[in-house]
Length: 213
Image (cartoon, rainbow, N blue to C red; front, side, top):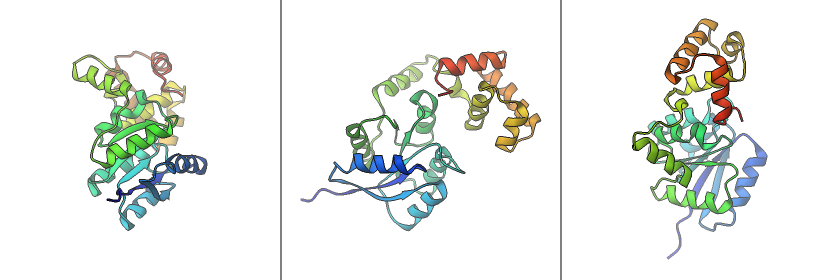
């Protein structure tokens, strides 16, 4: 009996990355990159036009980011397995993505074998997490405190990273289309949630947890 082909939608705005992933997956006879998209808008158009088993999605997309795309797909196409493939370390976005409904999270330095294994697993209805991420989940379930930034909303995390880089309230507001007063409110909320007292402490925390890479 013939093996079912797993159809993949590859969503990344970098041509080199897409070509690299396509090459990595070419060694798997049961996996086909059936379409590519460079933005969330293109991804939605592709998904509405044809059926895919897995969407392989980057977080840093132009316009609507990968997490926003994930949220929308979980509503409009709940059966589609969304596997996040990102440059961001697991510590920054992995648990957040999985809580939003992602079927797995991989970093772009993953091997071809790992990527193929993850696609096969999520296409069959499973979840893919690395051993280190599984340990983080066990820590959270066990009631131990994880990284404090995990209590922040997506927008709060975005503001927090900009503050930690030393950006001014005005610049952050311009970048995120918010008023400086609103950014200041976010700053106060972030410091309170994280139990920190200043931007300097935010910066130190971000550096220690790899949030500025």
